[in-house]
Length: 131
Image 1 (cartoon, rainbow, N blue to C red):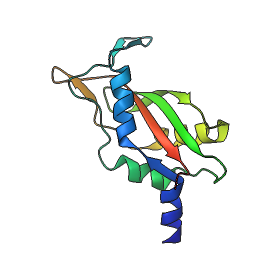
Image 2 (cartoon, rainbow, N blue to C red; image 1 turned 90 degrees about the horizontal axis):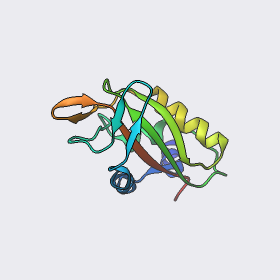
Image 3 (tube, rainbow, N blue to C red; image 1 turned 120 degrees about the horizontal axis):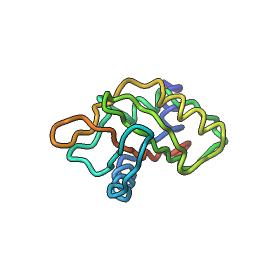
Image 4 (tube, one colour; image 1 turned 45 degrees about the horizontal axis):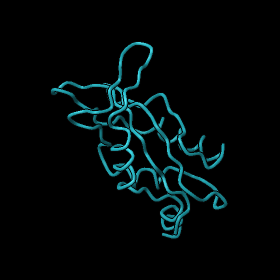
């Protein structure tokens, strides 16, 4: 029980912030080597479960690191995540751990445009060690 509380204290996901970030970046166009990636979709990608609980259970960051880490990544047509970019870093340890956990997580439900899966850029803010 203490470990669960400790983990819950260590990482708190603020979904409101992710929606704000998505809104701010929704009109941008990005490109990859093979295709254009538009970030304004009919249906945004989503994690097929409770993203906050998943991250709280898997991210392990020392209690000395505090603040908001923001990571941008591509949710591919098949729901896999790639092209991770740290937008707001709390340091190399935190960057590495966040990317590790996102890389290992189950596939997401992909974004759709006109009913067809499309790659979508996603910005995820993560509050670390907030009480």
